[in-house]
Image (cartoon, rainbow, N blue to C red; front, side):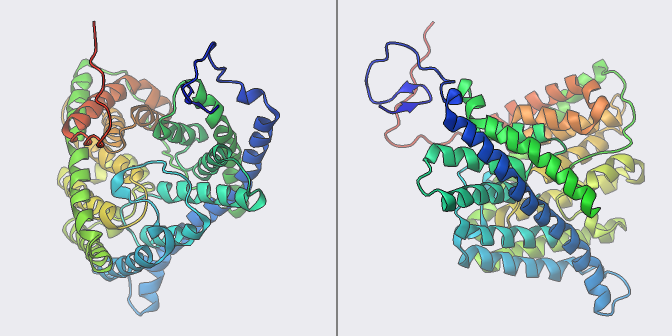
Length: 454
């Protein structure tokens, strides 16, 4: 008899409820935990190396290369040919290598199973090119695929008879380990994957405890490698955060406004990205080059109109969040609005054709919107920043608990102070975004839901 999450599935009557924790009491579960812990070490080393390589390639492409070609500095137009080259490389990778370069970022963040080992070179090449050349995407989706694929592939090579359920748990553990330090806390990375997976009830802990273990060990490994190499951990963090005042009644009103604006903006970004993606998939290489050209042109326009470097508009925005918060007085409202417009459009183009994750650009856009609104009476900078981050995150990802935690933990003690405002903004944005998102058509043959009865 096979047992599913809700009990027996072969039609036999159950005389007693199944024990959801029976698996934990077996010797096999202890072996699973040991395997998850062992997998965390090599997976974290590979993930750290990937992030370090991206970090080293960014200045090489935009600073060292133009100087090597004889330019006194980086020309204003430099992002255009660079992103055109990125479009060519990513388009060819997606078209010709196994695995199509990994997950389509326009489809959101989802766990669809660990990719096979044969797909990992394409995943790494497409993501490495996208991220290092300045595409407006983050590293989380490729790291999730890389961690899960390496974990399952390595264990399958050692034990070809591994049950599918155990392989899935180890793949999740590898993904947990790969992003353990990326969001600033191993708990936050684990919580993200828990919410994405959609598991609930007692089976949530049983299945995902190996992932939590790998995540905790992974964060230690990232910290150790960062100290040993002097490169840091590449984690999301803000520094020198001023103390936040207690929320006020006007700020609760602004929470409703920010939630409404983000709830409308998120579905708009996704609709445009998916519209563009529909054209990209039909003409993969030339269309990806065109999207790269669009991102580069937007960066040049932003730099030319504001006098600020194009790098402030390019990339995921992870490292720029701190400077945006710390040096917000150095931006005029007009420059911030232009930054939001250009980066938002570049985000849509990047989602449609390149490879990476959707989280960090959403955080940056939300933060920039909150900074703009902090110029109006009744809203402090810290509260606007935090509410914008949480609201835009949930509008793009549909993960309310993760969005609240991201916005509050990012700001430390000040985040805890403004957490009630963040919760209101996130709930409003979540409801508005869902109301503006068309319902998924029912699959033929799927029974209609039973009506509610009083």
